[in-house]
Image 1 (cartoon, rainbow, N blue to C red):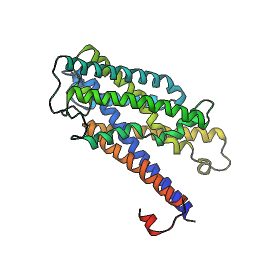
Image 2 (image 1 turned 90 degrees about the horizontal axis):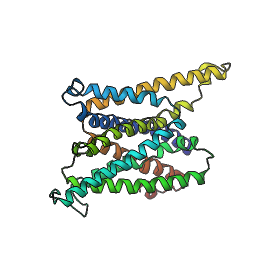
Image 3 (image 1 turned 90 degrees about the vertical axis):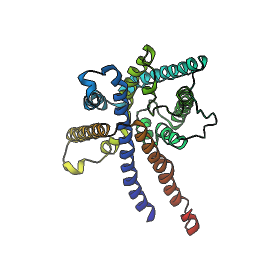
Image 4 (image 1 turned 120 degrees about the vertical axis):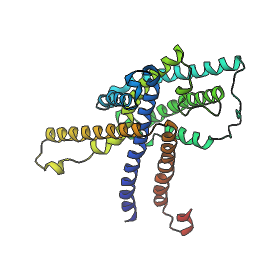
Length: 303
């Protein structure tokens, strides 16, 4: 009836939205890698144009995207350690400016200033991981809903602390004029340069994790129909690897072109975060709930 039809439409809509939202994240990752590496190559042929660093970033992340998710656990630990260090650097910079009475003017301690809505949209891009949940659960060792829920509670608790410290210290240290990529605002010191190098490693580690939900439909697709009923399991697996590899090449290429054309990290994160909020926390769950609750009045549908 109506529910199966709705399910088919929502599947196509959500899969397309996942690709758009994830592609925005991948574009922002390559932009962040470019911005982090640029101070080190200023005045050299690599720093004279935008494309060399973006190309290097794409070359670095591509082989990582071919790895199975369980092999990315070590890179995730590196990413976590670097994030801790980056937060410490930003907090130390705030403390240094506060102790020398050199904090910027125009600070709004209440937080109701220009850019508040954009900040929430950018934050949503970091917090909304609904599209990654199923692939992550599939790779969880000794998986169960209870174990996965516990992991999510711990992970989001740590994220809440890290993001709050990073956003508050960065804003208080540099004020309303802070760059949308805080690394650009950091001074050229040894500690800040280590943070920039670490950020490149973090982004390279997270990039393939964001690719996983994009290629999940291809990995789960029934390809035997295309190859014929008499195709062997080995032939189906080889064909599946070819299809997913071609998809990964296309994904990296499109994100590479996006990072070449779009230079502002803040623009990408705000637009992408707004898409994530609208699709994954609003539209999708709302339409499913509309049908599953079985209410048919016009007032309910309109609301």
